[in-house]
Image (tube, rainbow, N blue to C red; front, top):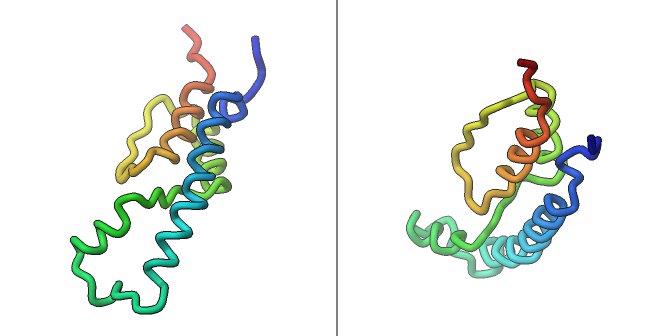
Length: 106
């Protein structure tokens, strides 16, 4: 039996690396636009704000994802309900935790 934690599997790490890298680039540009000179964030409508942020990933930080993974694994979570998923970064951490949980004894 392979003892590699599911969070460290190459395919899981590849997806997380790609999404976190995309967020690092895309989100920084969007945040600079929101905070930049002439920003109208405070006066913008909720629709205008949503339009501006629609392409932002705004993922959970890597350390937060590792924490979610560890908590889910520590309680042997079989089911996880997540609300508010945007691009699914935290979902990858949860899915790795559920996939890697020990099988119940029969």
